[in-house]
Length: 238
Ligand code: PXP
Image (cartoon, rainbow, N blue to C red; front, side):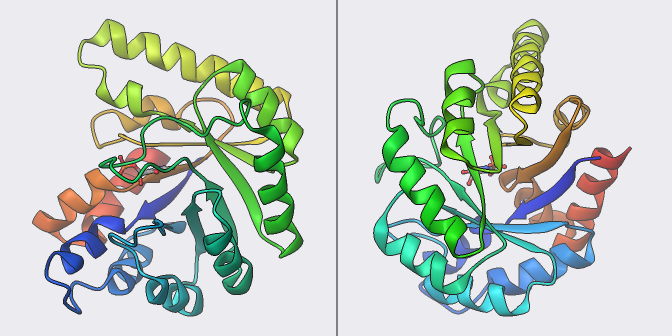
């Protein structure tokens, strides 16, 4: 059964809108845990637009479930990760002007660089996952790096409006999931998943972890974090 990683970046985005102390993503993480989250995910971006170094540090000290740090292949953040040692790092691509992560990490295009970061993080005792598009070439390249897991990018599935397009994206994800399992990598997925579209992805054979942020925080604004997480967890485990 897939585990739920709750991404609390958007809580930090609201805080940073006023450069204030609240709302605190650390409090949101605690409430997410109470709602049944199996993990807490944060993306420490180079420009520090939402999550701050302090957040990662305090979450590392207080989170009782798995802490998954999303980061780009950048030395400064890798050093911080090796010092704080979250249980898992997910390597993602990062462009300064993007609103959110666009597309998967091009592992096939830069295998040497990615492998160096995978090794450095693993040497610090961190499990490494690579956020990639659902393509055979990227899965093969990911396996070559020695990473333990891959997170399949579900953004196109999430954006598909008509049922036929959504089904086509789901077929692509399921086939990629099979290749991931054949490569003996742990299967994760995330991006653009919500209360309406999560169930078919959670049902893909071998799915171990789903990372979900926007839809949960959006619902939490209306009903509270604990309930929003509980509702998502119910859908995934159904
Ligand atoms: N997985 C990765 C690698 C991401 O970069 C993000 C967005 O920060 C998510 C999952 C969560 O995406 P969403 O906010 O659309 O649920």
